[in-house]
Image (cartoon, rainbow, N blue to C red; front, side, top):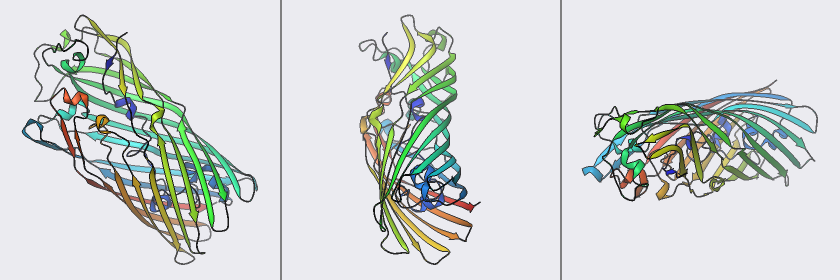
Length: 441
């Protein structure tokens, strides 16, 4: 069966664990340290960074916290005599919970809940906007429930493992036209253009992920940490696939929608996706009793998937000669290493000062770049304060994120079919605030 090859990115987005939308800042202490939390630093949120590190926690500890940020994107092009748009501003509140318990001198266990990824994107439709042919509206969120266990092998070496139970949900709206479907199938025969909207509603998936970590106390001043995380793959189900005529003022039809899709335009679909894995390496150095420094490297393996295949419940007949049953998208992203450096200084017995810096290169090459996933290189600075007593502590953190501008020529094939050959995304800044409470029970 011949397939329509379209850069169809929605159900991929529901499983993203990579640069840009992955929530790496879990807990205010780790946030203040720019996510450098694999080797020497530890608290109950170590479940999410390196489960082996919870062997350094005494008794039973509970941590509650949350972070808040917002983002929007600015787009411009020299095509169509010049266009410029801003996406709708999206705000994110990301709560987290973590609990750890020491059973004896060899065995620890933990339980965590957090929002592992979240993204929202909505482009304006009140005037001509070619970006809607890539994504008019996109929303996804993944909540992860993470039990963990850790063993202390010796005074210097610990290992740990975690199992994530992930609950993803999302929606997606995208425009197509007749040319976009047929141009690759008819040897250059291009029909009269017709806009229509493809909506995926009630997209949901439940899948498992894994984590493994090791911690090695090399000396009284040096600590090494290693962890790897990934998933066993997921099946994303779209509760409703709806095809309808465009409702935007710039749409132009030359014939009715029912002449294009003879079969019912509302049905269900599912996609099978292999998620990436991320390897984390960290080295911590404690030059004095008051100061600790840590540097971590994160390596995501995007090559673990290169294709997203979406199967429709029933084939949709386009004209009288082609059945649209399966959509396949190709993703050939790079595997860039991101760096994170954090420092914590104990100003007194109760007050800690924390700072961090990080650098995250974009994994997306120009030919894969799109308005759905406007990944560009980014860097950031973070800072925070911690107060502690015998049985409790409170931490606050702030993270500044700078996202670089990016100019792409001849990137997305679907957008090129509609006359868009040049895309420019302006540089932007994000501000994240976090607060957390830790208690020894």
